[in-house]
Image (cartoon, rainbow, N blue to C red; front, side, top):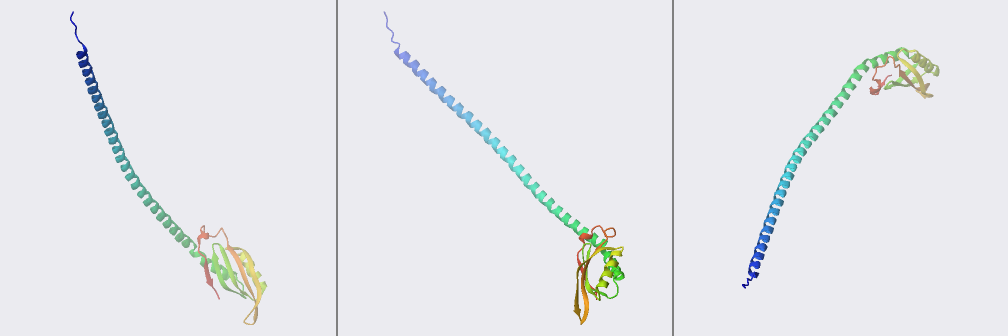
Length: 197
């Protein structure tokens, strides 16, 4: 009977299997590393593309923000110009009012009454001056109330005092321009102070 020793043959097979395993493991590692590298490069490319898009959008947003600021400045300039235009229109509409007011005051103030100050704030007229008697102040207030241009006169102050060794009544009266004849923008009119002797 012939004896065959299979140990060397088995040992060779074992070595071959071990070699195949290491080669396969090496190939799998190389394949895994290649796949990881490809995925990493793909993701890096996507991130770079997204960063480029984001920079583009940020630049566009910054340009739009600058345009919005410019529009806000233009709107501010437009508002200021409209306000100036309104002031000019108000002054134009109130231009004749002062002349009419002085004509009316000259017609309604009785003799013996002297105005020292006439001031206007919107539709309110303040009259300050001197009168020879309280009756003349009352007469002037009655005339002002009967005026088609003025209304609602009211005494703020009326006091007797000596002026050049003569007894006079120092008075202050508020009277209002009638709303039906007053311009629409009378509240925007600047206060004016005029001296009258």
